[in-house]
Length: 103
Image 1 (cartoon, rainbow, N blue to C red):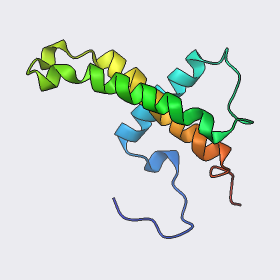
Image 2 (cartoon, rainbow, N blue to C red; image 1 turned 90 degrees about the vertical axis):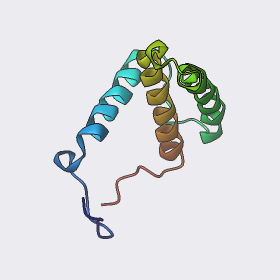
Image 3 (cartoon, one colour; image 1 turned 30 degrees about the horizontal axis):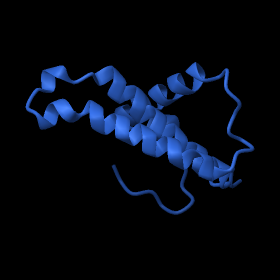
């Protein structure tokens, strides 16, 4: 993949399959939490703690690798927590105005 020129836009069709798959996980987690208030009017600092919490959960889920037991890995939990971290990061950027359309 080539580097984008400044101002060049990326379309959905330009995304790597892994990025699309992960974005779908992120959306799945967002929809699972639709019953909660949104993040649009939140202070970005509100999401720093949850990122740290989810990071610890990922770390704990990866421990089987450290002990040579990868078969004990609970991939479903790693996927969920990783998508949550990405969503909190997205919410921080959005709350800071970093996802506004630059048209």
